[in-house]
Length: 268
Image (cartoon, rainbow, N blue to C red; front, side):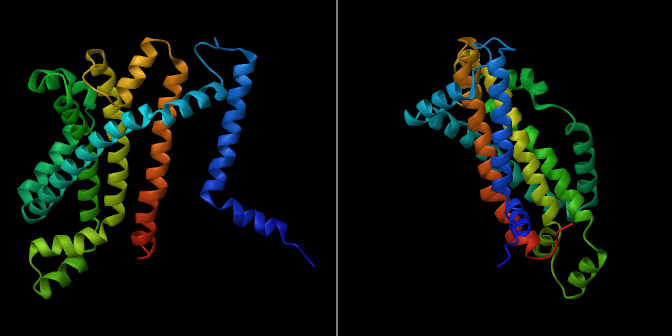
């Protein structure tokens, strides 16, 4: 009887969760090693065990879950508003050259502008609170999604458009039935970028507004824990953000990609 161990090992290594566990073990080992050497003050860099205990404590009492839920609510709201605007604007932009040129100009001018740079304007226009945070988030999310959607639409083969015109498809239906499916890899890439930018904008804005106590998400939580030198709790909140990121990537984006791009043979 012959055991093909290398083959089985390679097949096992192809699984994403195996790789993540392996790299996580390495990261925790290095972290514990640095903690034991006391390269940094233990008060400023707690060990993995202390952080894990704090993380589980806040998970069990529900405080970390509530704060994560508040942040996720803001992110989903910002994403939905941005996606709705992009869909409507793109449909009209594909039917009107002036709007298409306007979209390119807006992306060029506004996409490089960090959302947090608009903080003074957000405070003047919306005050200190959720509306100001939402404004900063939408600015951070909107332009990368619009850029990817427009780029995807422009990369759609001309033959697709000609066939749609020949069979009498209206321009709105052509956008929904031809352009969106053909440009879906770019659209999905834009959603991923928007998701990551949403977190950066939200955490930054919440940490700034955290001094007022008006926000109750993870950014505010990190800010307050840093103020009270609760480094174990701060690391626990950071880990919560990482866990949410991994879950969304594996349970949403990866499954959507497998059900669409991979299934349709559009992998690049």
